[in-house]
Image 1 (tube, rainbow, N blue to C red):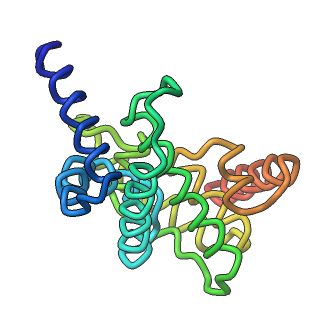
Image 2: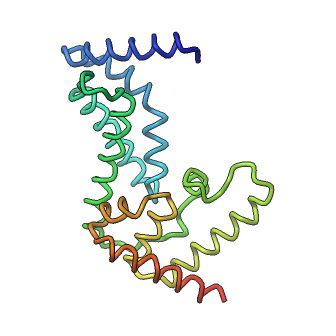
Length: 194
């Protein structure tokens, strides 16, 4: 995209945001379509199962609408940056709320290849990707057998690319607890592979 086209798109987006704020709610459909792929990608990278992914997508659209309504151009951030931050934070908050209230057991082996690719665990087009995918699925199956509930939750977020700080926030645990849990996970998985 040429610079002038990008500038025009940004100006157009600013006008649409102003119109939505002034009551033209039907224009939200345009913005939702513009951010659809970003919302789906964020939800896919953060979710474990399809139903959770669908809930996160819904949260993403709610966050987008909220971002439009509260965006202040004078604060210096681009709308795209602001919206992406709002979307990710709302999804993380949803995960935190629902993980803490969920009594169901995590199945790490249910994590799909798309999530592993998006998190960087598998590279698209990597010549040995079949072997890598098999090894990762074996590792996830082993983790399902060996890890405690908390360890499974921490591990699932860790392999999806969450930072330690994001894991702590999502699971409402201390940094020390997160670090200790990751150490136990590594120890158990190394011992289980031998």
